[in-house]
Image (cartoon, rainbow, N blue to C red; front, side):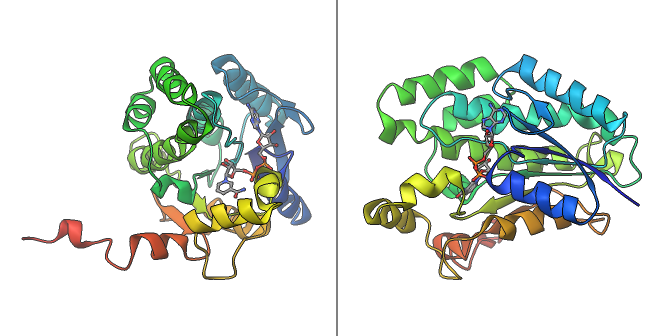
Amino acid sequence: MTRTYVITGAASGIGATTARLLTERGERVIGIDLRGTDVDADLSTPAGRQEAAAKATELAGGTIDAVIACAGISAPIPATVAVNFFGVTELLEALLPALAGSDAPRAAVVSSMASLQPNSPEIVAAALAGDEATALAEAEKLTAQGPEIGYLVYPSSKRALARWVRRESITPAWAGAGIPLNAVAPGTVLTPMTAGLLATPEGAAMVDASVPMPLNSHQPPESVANLLIWLTSVENTHMAGQVVYDDGGADATLRGDDIWSWADQH
Ligand code: NAI
């Protein structure tokens, strides 16, 4: 039976590729983006998120089977936390009533291997508290110090999103409603987001130094899209709260083989 997917960031990169692959399989896709797809909306604002959810629900006829949230930006500006965290979490929450009508509701979001990088604990804490004004103010403090410090907003937004997924996935709203909620964490994906950085040898060397990818190096958007499609498929009945590092081995390289000893008795 045809499933109805809502995909944010559907006009470019990972979102566009996911939308194309699902459409080729005969599924129904409702795209959300600033422009260029089915629903024009700005996910950096609360009003834009509510409007996006309302229009997508209307286009879907009231029931949505899966939400795949890809929209994001990586610029060293405060809006990065607004789009990457609140533009995902508030939209997902606004779409919960439409997901409730599905026989097999699913949701997946795009975090990043950048969730492992240095970040701002203040931004992460404010985001997880649902306090957008404070998160934006903390981001502003960093971006005012220039792009190198301002870059911290991006890993902060992705760390907070990964933690939100783990926290919320097991609650009555998600697990209790039978909705698997998970995240993917890609490495360096070949999309318009990274094209500028990878265009020069210096830029590529800088990226590769912080995102080591021993398996097959930079990845095509299909490598992420296919995982998002599985996470939101009927077949995913028991995966919840996972942040799946689909990153050419960057996570295993950076964190090493022992990510379990925190739980050992000493
Ligand atoms: P992209 O730039 O090709 O696509 C992002 C899309 O999000 C664009 O169509 C853009 O218009 C949309 N968007 C941005 N701000 C928006 C707003 N305020 N409202 C609505 N839509 C908005 O980038 P890409 O690479 O496809 O990124 C997709 C996701 O993957 C992002 O969340 C990004 O952070 C994440 N990611 C990307 C990686 C990469 O190397 N490209 C690595 C890890 C994560």
